[in-house]
Amino acid sequence: MRATAKWMLAALAAVGAVLLAGVPLTAMRSAASTGRLLFALAGLAIALVGVGWALWVTSEALMPRLVSYQDLDSPRFAEIKAVIEAEPELFLGPSAGQGPTALPDFDHDRARHRRALQDVTRLLAAETDPTRRQALAAARRQAASWVADDYARVSRLAALMYAWDVRAGVRRARVHTFAGCGITLLGALCLVLATSEADTADKTPAPASAVSPSPSASALASPSTPAH
Image 1 (cartoon, one colour):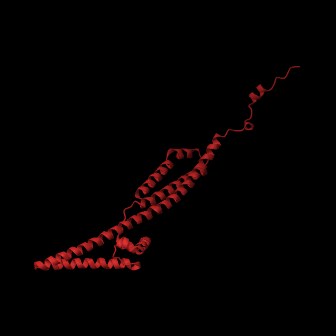
Image 2: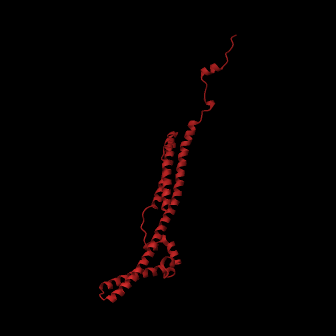
Image 3: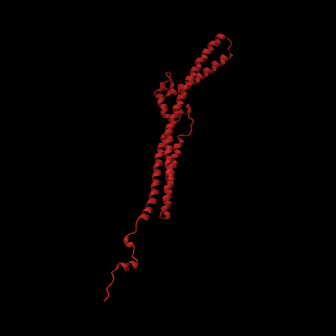
């Protein structure tokens, strides 16, 4: 998805380079009046605003962002939350609850596993009896495996949320890109209209009736009057 955003940025930069090339600026010299020149400049400005707007929004999809598991309750991740609640065993493990209570139960189990690991670690550090230390060490390994499983599931969920957030940014950038392309097209059309009519007027030949013959040409063209 980020590669798609980079491709969009490259295409928009190419459009901006074409608009800033020497062809439009040279064509504006042929504007017949100050009004047409201002119209051409306004068209160029509108086109560049459209490209800049699309570039700005598309570049937002490439900006670094921080997404954590705690953001799962925010509205932008409501769809992911609904999917997790529909099939919690795929995301939270086979012992996960069902329905809307799946995530709260998972969070409660995570907190319980962390407390168990902390308690057994503290007891193991204070215990001196070898037999009890062996039992506490086994209990600590079990608690540590629970915590590791919980951490792996939370990490996978955070990665999914991050990809979902980037996906939403790229989708939003596509909409703004199409809108920016429409604005750019409108500005380019204004630029073409302001310069093409002036070029047409310069290249249109004057009608023959508008050219009056000179006196010398009339004398040469008229036949001589015979003398009586």
